[in-house]
Image 1 (cartoon, rainbow, N blue to C red):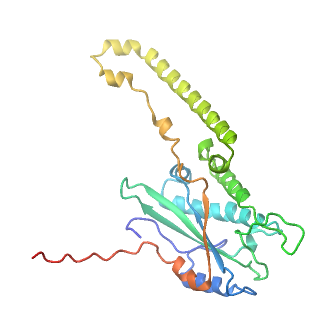
Image 2: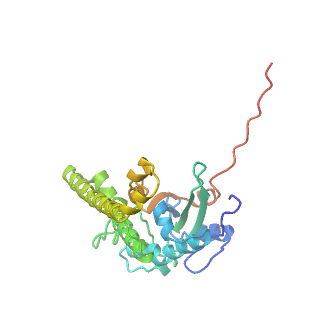
Image 3: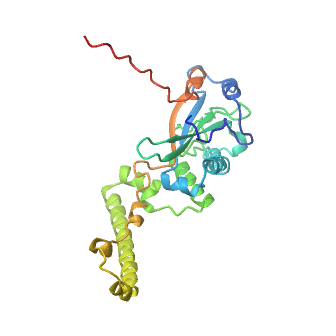
Length: 283
């Protein structure tokens, strides 16, 4: 981890700074009645956009504490509820690890959280898989299920409520899901709505600038010649704010499932320094 970036250990629903060895042991031993071919855990990635991160605090420590609060108060409760088995956050065995990194291009700080969630509940009696294709099944061998789309939606709404975040339509999971999987008519309807919203913002922005120019007209005439480019300049920061992680449709992504043998690899630092190749002497 780079110098100056806030770091800490693993956390779960109640505790912080948990050692890696405890995480491995706890997940590896919570496998009652699982077959060797069954996944022992699931790796989940929680990655806020740049604008979402700004709503989570000012300092790295504030953002990290906000992320833990979000995982504990919003994501894990929604995760448990989505199995439709009467589970609560206390039934889910999980560990989280927060990572910070800086972009080499613009030095922008990014934060994300890796969650390792056990396949079995805390009692090791119930199998829980977020990758099942069943959704709230009430009859048959398999009951319950998991609605991933509902989880993404509820996790997003929970984030907005917790941090008083004013999410733009183009940032929402529903928007990205429709643009990727919806019918042509649904996609066109969304694009029309987005265009109309942008049009209203442009009109408001122009109106504000015209009012400012009228109010300061006399002052401009009494001063020296003003740069023509400066006089015609219209602020565009409001439009730039709309570019919020458009490549991703959700805060949450399910990365993988794994066996006990692969757990140790997943919780290791992902960025391993590459050895520099020695340059050979030129003859």
